[in-house]
Length: 81
Image (cartoon, rainbow, N blue to C red; front, side, top):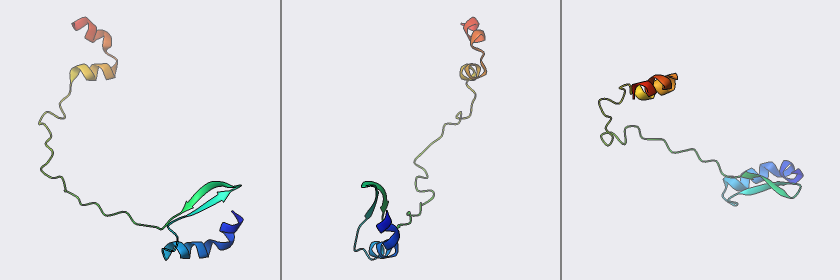
C-alpha cells in the first residue's frame, strides 16, 4: 500500500499509456484493489428491438385469483372451489 501511495501518479501514467494492462495493489501481501484503464461504457441504441416484441392486449388485465392471493383472500377462493 505504501508503494501505491508513493507512486500513484506513475502507476496511473503507465496504465493510461498502455505500458501495464492493470496494477494490483496489495495490503499485507494480499490483493486489495486493481488499477485498470478507464473506459466509458458504450452508448445504448434506443429502439433497437422495436417490432421484435409484442405485448398482449390483456397484459394489464387483472387475474382475480392472483389478486385474491395477494390480498389474503385465500379462504374465499377455497370456498368458491
